[in-house]
Image (tube, rainbow, N blue to C red; front, side, top):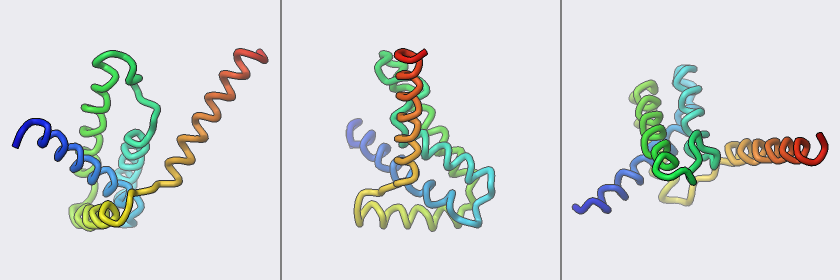
Length: 127
């Protein structure tokens, strides 16, 4: 297996784990701290807003390559094994059926962009 195939496999596994986390933070058997951490990781993974913007050379992509996998790994450790196993199977099924859609996360991201845009317009043109 060459390097590109390994990276693709790793990215697919990370995507599967992220979708499974979105299932796991809704499960009543998941502890509250794991729900909170899982929700934050999923929101950050889906968000177009990064801690370090992607246009900054090298550092821009390092947060995606380091922070998201570390966050996912910690979230998986916090979630009970049986819950995570069930959610991984559900994520596999969702990936086979169709592309996953998270309307709540999308709405939150759009709301953040509208607030930021409103603040910029207010600051530049009104204040």
